[in-house]
Figure 1: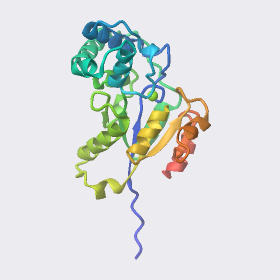
Figure 2: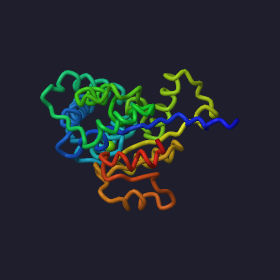
Figure 3: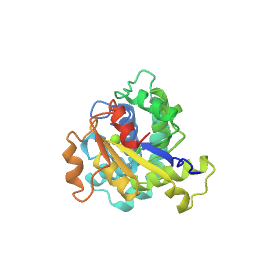
Figure 4: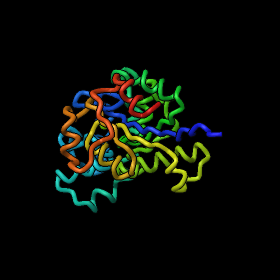
Length: 249
Ligand SMILES: [Mg+2]
């Protein structure tokens, strides 16, 4: 007798800023302030996050960009990076006031509810330092949706962060991270930047782009990778039914 095919396990990793939560110039002020404070204290450089490319990058790379702009060598930068990340985290924890706004983007709660109900494993992949990323998600009441995550404090490369998140989910599920196990999973990464889609490609998972951050046109995702398109691009996460249909769940 034929048996119904068992659906593969599915993991979806989500970026935070510009994907789950509103990003941009007027958001994340506490986070930016913490980084700028640490850069000032550790290297004596007064620089702003806003003055360098930061969307889609991990916090250590953002700090590197701020310091390079002020003439610091890579040796000067990376020799003190751990100290700066620690100080930025502590400063954020002390100063992240309860009244600092966090805006959950449209459709996020409803989509995450549905994915959970349908047995999809959810993890965070963000360039934020870990404690900062989790605190924002707590404030937004999104933390309970996620089993685990990988953050800018784990690695400087976003592609590597997707691989780390994948390993952590497999560990949480008690699955050995052998290639055969990974191959039996469907894995997607959702993000708002070209760097997210590149990371998905690097980690050999399928990228799902959203136009709620820096990228405003579907074509921009394609132009950056002429030989490779994201699996799907959505205007925002209110397009739940389109996503569920493409995922086949
Ligand atoms: Mg983002």
